[in-house]
Image (tube, rainbow, N blue to C red; front, side):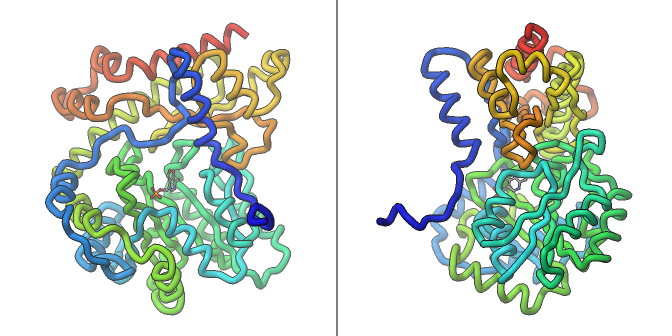
Length: 426
Ligand SMILES: Cc1ncc(COP(=O)(O)O)c(C=O)c1O
């Protein structure tokens, strides 16, 4: 009887894909794990050292997070994003995912505007809470960016204008690896103001903008932006579970109290040793800037190379500007794929994995229609520790030479070639 009356939550595509990949690996074949988006880099040395030092710290902390850490996060983001954030605006939690969920959970009723494609968890979170996800359409030609007209069109789909609207924006983006320019954000901001839209700006990849040129939405829409981030991506520490949210000052009253109420009734606080380690990570000093600069140039190099390889085989793809993903569009191969019985992003990924051992995540997991032949490619199958070491040995004043690039990224480059060979052989 306890198997009835359950909520519908589909198993995440990422987990399914990992299972399939493991099965193939079990048969001794090589698998290219381009489906799994985890940072390949080790956490910042100073943070690892601090975690070691504070492993015995065991107390619960305040629900909002250690005051010292909130000071660090506020100063860090004020500096690197050119915004004015105070410690009272910062919430610390075990990962930013629960913070996204808590923000949505704060509302009795909510329309959640989600660009398509977008990260896999936004829509399921909204549905779990009984909220209505509304798609903000984007397309390849528009670099998968939400445009003001698309936001206006999504607002028109609201069934009841009294229900508050929350839009989730994510840049640099997962699955697309693309950022918004300042001008694009300003144009969007006009629409947000016009329709009273609260925005979660998921900037978890912000510090991995390849050119170090991330523009936070909070700069242009301070009164209506909740910025989320954390250590998972730029600090290579997804499993540490340390996320942050930065609230607009207008929301420091009832809204913040509701969030803290949800936090105290669910996760209580982020792990204390990790918060203490995060105090070391959130220092905008030479060590952190150097660590970021090496990651960015490594990610940029391999991202550009894979994008070039795909483009050379007529796959439609935008060269990435941040993070570690590409979102190729295989539609130029539609006819040839149809002859194989491939008519959806799911069947495309299944066939590709079976034929070549290359794992990609299908576009429908990111909210695209099933028949649109797009997939996410995470170009992180390399040894991040070795890559950082090699990049540091070369120094930032010299470019990564071809030999070093080939040595560091051998498997990813081989996988990208294999993918294009498969396509051209169809
Ligand atoms: C776009 C995006 N947002 C949020 C998250 C969640 O990150 P966290 O580890 O902080 O919960 C991820 C992780 O994959 C992500 O890709």
